[in-house]
Image: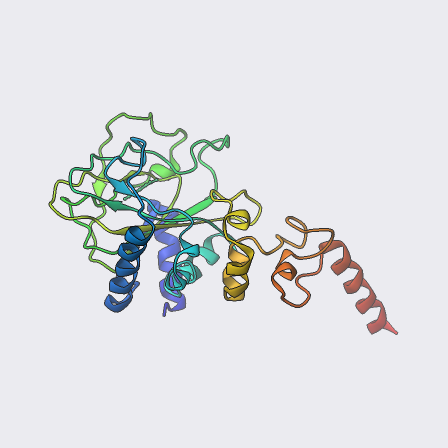
Length: 281
Ligand SMILES: O=C(O)CCC(=O)C(=O)O
């Protein structure tokens, strides 16, 4: 469990350097179980390798992970990560995407990029997406640990696609999580080892943004009904500031059988006014 000082320390490092590493965020039991679940799903669903150079021809990416195993629900909600995200964005943040990143031996280095570089905002800008790379294997210089360019989240431009940049390698033992501002220049390293590098990418964005994965349509309603409420909210069954995301003035969480959700801002304003007036009499 993170202390107040831990949370602030991580936030400061992300603001200053663009990234932080949460050592031993996940214990070894959870890491082994998550890895086993990935292997089981890969075989049960006969999932194959990615088909683009960006995603990696020798990389297994399983998108929309929450539909495959209830164990994965723990990842976006994890106590050692989510409080830092909520402090940097706010408590109405959303899960943007959640996928596996399993780099096979022989996988070439991924081009250096920003995750949000296609969004036409002038740079530098406030953090809009935070990406948590979960190491489920020891991340080493040989098996493709993520490469990062510290401080690049403050640059006024995005990297040129395919160009080589000086980068450091984010090595960490399994169980570690590197949490970074998605404007940080980064990319998976080359896997020149004989083993697969297991990882997750679990990205969060503001509640006023479009999520990278369409989780409301991609996750069957019956699956989302079984999620803990916080995960339902993270997946978009929520309204930002009582305004963005409503359905006919209702909070979409009600679609999942929950009691009345958040009031819309216009209704909440009247309720507050009435309360103040009543208190005066
Ligand atoms: O696998 C990694 O280490 C990073 C992957 C990544 O940055 C991406 O696919 O956008």
